[in-house]
Image: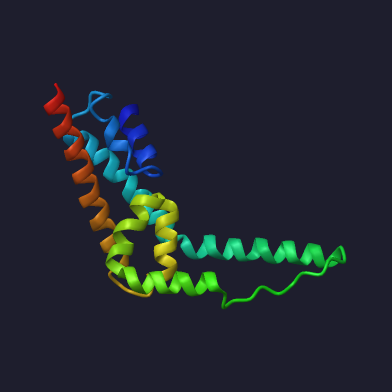
Length: 155
């Protein structure tokens, strides 16, 4: 029971690496796959649907810092919105496409960060969340399958 829970909790953050510990914990392929998938699904759901809250929280924190600085008499320069970095982000976003973003960001950046970024860019598309879940399932199957395939080759 605690093993499954620990796998689910760890995979909610570091989804890519959790299935690698399945054979060492004595879990079968399906036990590892299901525990890691459940953790990934819970994390993706929480952070996808809570992304608006987290982004608003970030904006509020920034505005509080600016307000405190102004009260202390510091001059805060206004941030430019159309910067070279923002142009590059938009260029890469258009270049890599939605499908690659749905797959890569939650996998490589971690589920919370990747899901929030994906939601920020593509929440207005209906298929965004189902595709994130689909790609998490496929990735978990591939990573877990590869782990147990290599384990069987070695042992």
